[in-house]
Length: 457
Image (cartoon, rainbow, N blue to C red):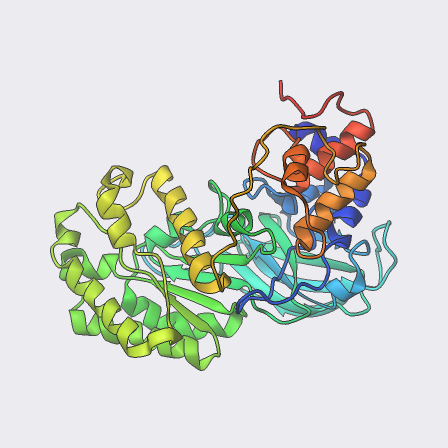
């Protein structure tokens, strides 16, 4: 299935279909969706065009790889203008968020680059007419968000002149464009130590944003991983102001404490003061601090006084009230799932996956949701009546693919019946209705596959 999707010749049509449905979404709770508008749109690169489309597909384990100097450009002309007047352009790399601490690393990271826009018509990559809207030199970060005014422009590109500080080196990124024309509301960054660094990367397992999207397809948040191995709350305090200066995210998680507690490296009151300073810095920037508990540990050197450090977090909850969003209770979770601690401190791969899912569920309850979902006692169908017939009109045609994308983008306006959702889940993944189901129907109509649901070999 992945090969069929990659090889489809209707990339531009798919992009237009996917984004044309993403209308102006109303606020849900305190969060106005900032959806991805670049998914599957035509992507171009100079030195290595073959990997350009890997930067904006749905898989964060695949990347665009270019040799600096090189560019990665997107044709967004298929996106309605109202949905790209202002955007966040965010790139992700697997290097450490910042070059501090004992485990700092830099691997194929863009260090000198520009963000550029172009008003040329879509369909053919423009060699000329590019306008620089932001310039970055000597970058030390493993991801960056840039707010870009795109009114009147159809193209955007990341133009990398140096990677890892030099020309001739490879740069490797995923690159997403999010619609923030109605304001930055669904953008997140997760600061923390090695547990955050290992858990909140979006290319290993299922990312936080994807888990949120599965809970409610209105949303696909920006999610930067600000975790850095080996650092403590003191390091967070020393650097938080500098980090916040370059990051437009609304929600800022601070998750330090394991290294503070390890051997009681940091006095309780100092840990409290460090964390309080970071909370105040976030609030001063008009952002929302998010504070989870320090994870449970079976390592005696960490566990000895861990409850006393978590007591400082409870103290902050009480002092700040609803100014702080309570993050997941990782102390409770890992005290009940010690089998997911690889070395008694750091989670294993399943533990990290559970962390990301718990982040999504907790934030959906405490940030995105305003009320309990409606329940019904009506019988729920569980049998496909006609595979691909999403709109229940008795036929399978392009209108079904369009309806799927419309319902994903604007479910309140384009309501899909339960039977339609069952019929629409045809990509063979059995993961509910996604954009892949719309693409699968298109492939079926183009005779690229012979039956629905698709049955992977």
